[in-house]
Image (cartoon, rainbow over all chains, first blue to last red; front, side, top):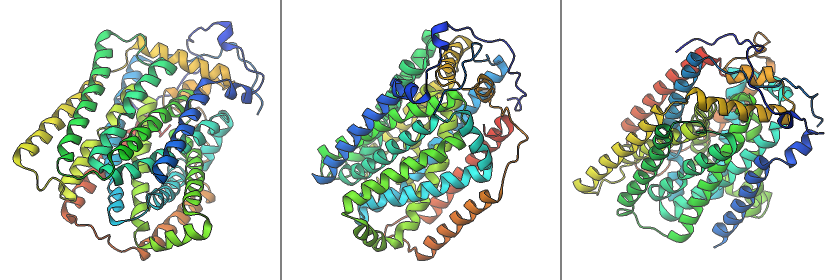
Length: 57
Length: 435
């Protein structure tokens, strides 16, 4: 394995479409419209409900 | 929060193939080290067998986790490094706290599961989290996209082998352990698996963006502690009742704190595995913790002592199958074509949240774009001092739990774990400076 290298941030870049690079108006809007936020939140709510059932049954 | 200015050239910088290989190998080692430490951290759950409330056990572990999650980053990189990461990607606090909430609920569910169906059955059920993690990795983060059919087969086949092996181990163990409430325990274990499998979405998101695992866990643990306190207060009926429960358990709280501390070391390696090897490789490898849990169960706690030679042989064969599954995954390294898809996923995060692409690119390469900044301040040493004093205080109150165990076997396993952590930690420091 190699040692920790110096990184050149200006080296070759991967290209992307314009749509992909368009910034949201605010980070909160970006968070609330991100599926990466809603899937864990849904799992959390379901988990709490199961925990309540397990704890009381 | 306000978005940073648009950057039309925000993009991920491809890694050199040699560096990519280095980081992949490091990620694989971290996954295996995580397995050793996460397996050892399950030992305190045996305390449920002496009648402690699952909520008190989980809260005790989370307090230990909280102490460790602030102490280790403060000592290794310093809180100034955490603050730098926070400034670079403040939106990740949301995911860190969310992941902490998921962990706390899942951990509590596992303790109910251990109580109802035993560690041997519950363990493989919640370890199904790796299968769900693989799905999320493919769907949300473009992992395995662009990979050859051989890589797909190795990762998915290896994970399935490990899961089938885990179920077989459970069946062997179940023959020697009465289940008290199978339906409730199995539901709790599977739900914990779903929560932990989903928790890897925040992990991967943070590391694609470039946050250091040491920074992520400091916010993660706020969600953990807040959720666990809310659950404990709700369950016990108020602060006074919870205080009474904790006071009654004061003689074993130290062991729970210690278990939480051990878990954090394992989880940190797991986080680096997710960062450098991806969810699809890192999580199945860290699920070798079941083999380590089995070693603890057999060598330290004398489980399966009553089993016949046939059952022991079956355990050995299944363990070999599981190790084979882990080996398949470890050998299915990420090729450049797949890594380009990782870069696309990284670019999505960079553009969506206006993060400096130099930050994400440097961190993806395991480097710190702002190296040379002050590392540790007085507050870092203060955090370490408070944690140490707290552990000593609980240690002075501790009494040996009324569980039969082999001290020599425990010492042997602890030495092995320390050696593994030392080797892996040194490699992480040398290659990435813990970024």
